[in-house]
Length: 273
Image 1: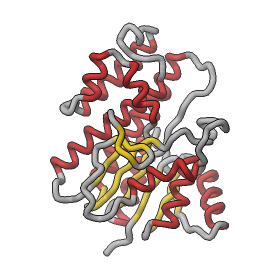
Image 2 (image 1 turned 90 degrees about the vertical axis):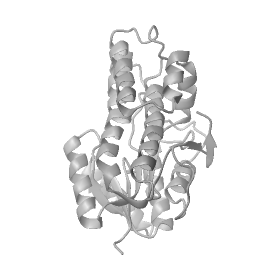
Image 3 (image 1 turned 45 degrees about the vertical axis):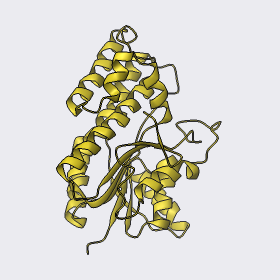
Image 4 (image 1 turned 180 degrees about the vertical axis):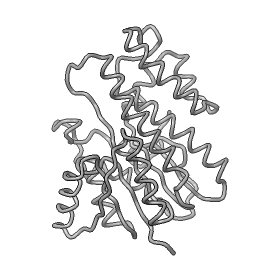
């Protein structure tokens, strides 16, 4: 048996670091903390080490395709793939950056870069693997603010990855022209990016079931809740450790479990979409 391995993106601080900390305690295998900045990532590994927890480090910037490919090749070579992948890396604007810029930058990281991660890592997820995409309850709220036509498409069980990508590109191009509202889109770049992440999770889960029906892989999107982090601010009710609970629960679903799969999960419960 090769050593089992878990990989968490954007995990040098906040919810990502809390997920790594929990996996170090609960997962039997190697746990990788990843970050785009090597110094910050290694510092976080040292913090865990001082707590008596052993995490490994690998550089990974989800906005850099070469970085994704290098990491995927590393895990394939050393471990034969990955057992747990948690796509946690993401961004949100807290200032008055113009909406067109917010739309492009937020979608590039939260949706397009997360999709790049899945394109390169999903093929190396081992049988019995668990894939968790950190989305947000904001995605469900934002979905309900879209036009009924868009809502129908995002909820459709035959929505394809290509169609979803086209919809996300459409949002960005309409936002750049200041016409997103006319197109039926809401005023939240972050929310729209997370609608994309949740919908993508459902699409890829169907794909995995079809292409690898006997491999027992479970893939879900989740909401960690409103968590006190640099991103969400200090008014949020949950600690990062509390925010890590649902992602970790989904990552550690027991062998042989068949559900949840292709769902949006919050507080360990499947949520309506």
